[in-house]
Structures are given as structure tokens and as C-alpha cells.
Length: 230
Length: 230
Image: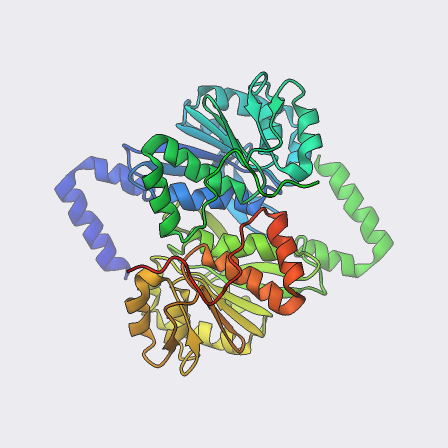
């Protein structure tokens, strides 16, 4: 299979010039798409990352997905998933979106001054910042959520609150939007928020169509999380 | 951070004997858990894998998750996710479960005789085999679904049907169970099936509790897929 594919690549390259070479170099990404930077760290929560990856990743004409960690290299979590990442400092100076997952790893990273500092810098320069679950605690620690409305996983809420005492925390929301900051409740809520983000940018029908394509039962109401714990 | 962690590991090792060494070697896995083997190939669908990973992965007392591919090494998909895998032939001779995702990559792998042969061998020896989306086409190609009831992604249904002419395909099901074979509809349906599998083994309340923990709106009715295309 390798020879014919190489041959096709070379032929298309000859036909379309050097811009194609750039595309090939960065995999499937296209030079006119917007970068979504996923921040990984040890023991991030699997679905916090890969739910939104499924949703944004299939829109290849719009977005290019990149995976970063503080030091680069493979990042593993409790589920045994080892994902290759690039060094965070190599992220483009102002990505379209920074996405910060939650998970048990946030309990350690909350005291990682180097990571929080880089989150602050990149989040500040991004057009949008999305956090899933306890990822909002890391963003809150950077100070960027101060005075803003946000939410988080309801079963870790008091811990998250204590990490951002100046944030206006909303315990009822499935996800919360305040200017360029989107914060969601736990795990699966990240998919609902990702679809909500698409609805805000491209209209509700566009988002519903993506949900339909992945056969996902989208909880469209961002103001009411049906998973609120006692 | 490395020194204290090493020190703790050595101390615990001294206190608990060699079984701990085995655990450490295989990451967080425990020697008395059952192996779930996820089969990856180029351009598998992200959520087909990581939805079930989120569900089974959090049950660390029950399951150990492993990621395999035909040749081992990093496997990348269209969403830019590069996951490290082990060589499929190193999988335990009879894993508890084999999980086969779908995605555009199945169109190529359906003609990969080496891969189909290994799927046949491992699926035959596994206690359970789960397929998500068009993953059922790969399993059907092995012949193991002949005469059995199965389902698949509704928008790729005729292609999947043609890959397993002797399979009793059900176009209405969200997921289908026939003996040890579980096959699901598209993408998110893999999460519904994974929860259904837990319900079959551990009871409905156990499965509902996992769905609650990840704030997932579980579609419990396996017989009726609400995403049937025209």
C-alpha cells in the first residue's frame, strides 16, 4: 500500500505546489484552519479530552487539533492511555482555543507554578478558553477567571471553589459562558459544552448536525445540569 | 519530584513484596483484574475507543486496559491523536474482552488479511468481544459473526452488511447482544453499549452509577436507536 500512496502524494505535490507539502508535514491539518490546543498532564480525565476531540476533530475544514504538555512527550493517565504531546512552549503564540481538561491530576498540577504560568500566558492570548470538569480550577488559579462566572464538576465543587475564591461559581449550570471563557461541569458535560460552542459560532442547526453525526444525545440546556449532587 | 517518588516506591516494595513490583511494571494495573484489549489502527474513530475507555477505565479494581495495534508503536487518527500501542501478538492469549472500534480506517483494514486473522484468533479466545460503529465490519469479515445478530452505524449500514452477508444485521438496535458478541451503532452508541455490558455483568444500578459519575445521559434502551437515518 505504501508505494501507491507515495506516488499519489508526489503527483499531487507536483500538481499543487508547496502548500500541499506543508499540509502533509503536519498530518491532516490544513494551513487555513484554526488551532485548538489541548493541554494534557498526568492523570487527566480521558473523556474530558476525547469527547471534545471527537466533536472538533471531525470539522477538519475548520480546526486543527494539537496536543501539548508542559514537557512534551508521552502523557499517560489512570486509564492507561499514553498520548504523544508537544512541548507547551512550542504552541502558537495565540491559538484559537485552549482546552484544559480535569481529572485527578488537577490536584497535583494546581501547585505546579510553571504550568499555571504557561496556562495564564496562552489562555490570555487565545481567542477562546474551554475547561472541562476540574480543569476550571487550573484556570481559576491563574487568576483569569477572577470576577467571572464559571462552573465545574459538582462532586468536586467545594475544592474547585477554594482554588478560585474570587470567581463567581455557578453550581447549577451544565456549562457557563463568560466572554471568551467556557467552563463545563463533569466529564460528559465537556461534549455538551463543545457542541454549545459550535452553536454559538455556527448556529444551533450546525451543532445539532454534529451531534447527530456522532449519534450523541446532546443536553442543549446549558443552564441546568441534571447531575447536581446533594 | 523523581527522587521522593522513587524512594516511596522502593519503601513500599520492601514492605509488600514482589507482587507490587509487577503492578508497578504495568502501570496502575492490578494482577487480579481482567484485561480489556483495545485494538487500534490508523484512522480509528476517537470516541469509539475513548468513550468505552472512560467507562471501563475508571473501574480499576475490575479491569486493566491495554492498547494494541498490528505492528505496535504510535497509532494516529484523523483527529491528530497519537496513542502508543503494543504489538497485537503480545496480547494475552485469552483477554477478558477485545474491543474493536470503527472509523474511516475500517475501509482500508477490511482487506488487511493479517489483521483480520489476528482479530479472529483473539476474538475467538476472548470471553467477550465488543465492536463500536463500523468495527462490526472487521469482526464480520473474520466470519465469527456468521449466523449471529449484530448491528452497526446506520449511515454506513449497507457497506457493513456487504462485508458480512451471513450475519443477521439489525438496523433498529442501539446495540445488539448475541452470546459473547456485543455490537453497537455509531460512535456515542459505544458508550451506551459499554454501560449495557456493565449492567449485564453487575446489574443496572451499578451501570447507572457509572453513568452518573461521568454525568452521562445513558440511552438504556438497546433495542431502539433514535439516530436511524432515512
